[in-house]
Length: 487
Image (cartoon, rainbow, N blue to C red):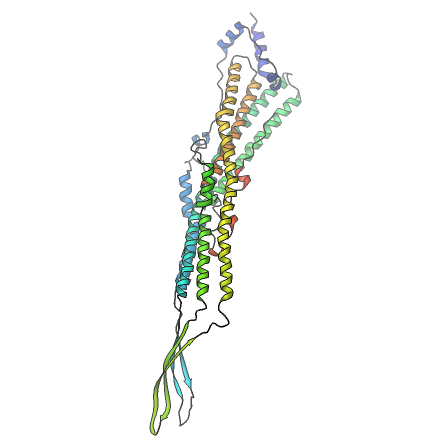
């Protein structure tokens, strides 16, 4: 049997072997008597695995939920109030369009004479325009279409805000999970650097290996601090879209791994192209253009100008020394549409109607094109998340577990174990990024690609802005960039 000193030397060598040498070499086999002695004196080593939700378990204050975020946004996001104000404005414009022209009341005089003769006529009149051909009704119909547009805009804005709050919430949740994972990675790398320091102190490693380990530990600590900044940034974005920019930072409650947005790719594209508020707005805008054309065609039909009143005639009534007295006035006028038949406006409104009908097709095609891009990103993110969850992470976990078991039996070096653990936690960060991408693209598709909750609702005259109506999340907000793995 070897001496206790021999066993101690073998243990130290196994613990401090360089990571790359230990990965390239076969594990050192131990005699049965040393194995028995090791089992009697060294406690079982327990592996440490990455998992989600730890920050929620250790939160200092109350967790912030998605329902709370949506409730606050419903009462605080200014764009929702803007949409309501636009509905009120459209209804007020409709009321104004149906009002009859005001009458005109005035004084009239004719052949007014003074002095002793005191002749002439003086009196008053009332003048009223009679609107014909149902032009007021046609104008009211135009503004009814504007009310419909404003109401669809309000519905769209509600979807936009809700989707924006959801995506911002899940970005905060993913950033929260990434912070835990990157702090773990920084600690693992620090442990590795400590092991390299011990190797250097005993002459088992040179200074370059120590510096390399310390630099990597510093790099991962930097990533962890940057992630802290990213978490604050995401929280500020969430607070802004909610409408509460001074909302104090809190830990959000959620689950990235379950209840993913479940979408059929073909159905998602079809739903966006046919059921999106953008297509409904395009339909309503075309109906409004048709109403404008109908009103323009009625404009050439002249209105009646009625005028009536009374005049007192001071002229003597023949040889009788009395004035003629009160006389009635009545006039009826009509404008003859010889030169101006509103033909220019009719032609312009007809062209506008053609344009809005074509706009409906363009919007549908634009939605299909952008939905196809989002669906492709969603499909890739879902495939990536499933691959990590079902294949990559379980294999990395198993490899790490086996190495921990070997380390407990003194058949593997500690740096080798730390390298495997680091790889597992690095893969966990990539898994979290794929989950974030899955949630953001899935929610965008469920929300008809309407994701900017601080975009103001459009005025009826500004509806032909397809980028606004079909905007997608910015690519750098959807796609999380994986942190490069150490070779």
